[in-house]
Length: 140
Ligand SMILES: [Zn+2]
Image (tube, rainbow, N blue to C red; front, side, top):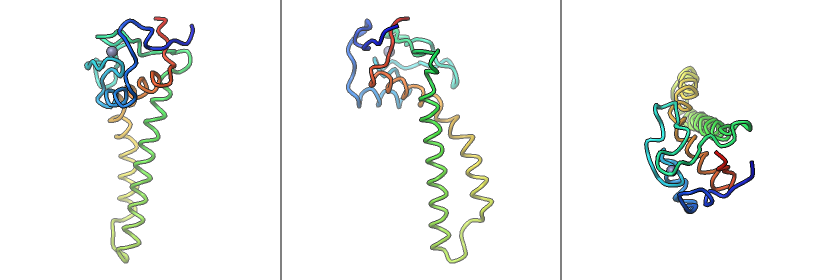
């Protein structure tokens, strides 16, 4: 399977980078903007219902590993930011502020909730990144 430009696929030209990622952040097809790409929160269609883009890309290479990486980065970033804010609150409140267990429980909850919330968005964002990087294979 060769490397193909998405513009080679029937359905047209590659959108601009802001358009690609703007559509992706709305869970829409980055290439054509169509919605309803998911049959449930967890299940993405194999192909775009409008332009036919095959989302699974190259499954033999762990195509959606990039989506998992984005998701992990967002979750870790949010937790680190929360801990940072907690440290600032402790430093400025002279002994007050929330107890440590509150931060631990909140971080643990975020570590479970955020990846679930981000899941479909990171998949469409990764599809946009793949198109942007010209890594889409239209062989199927
Ligand atoms: Zn599409």
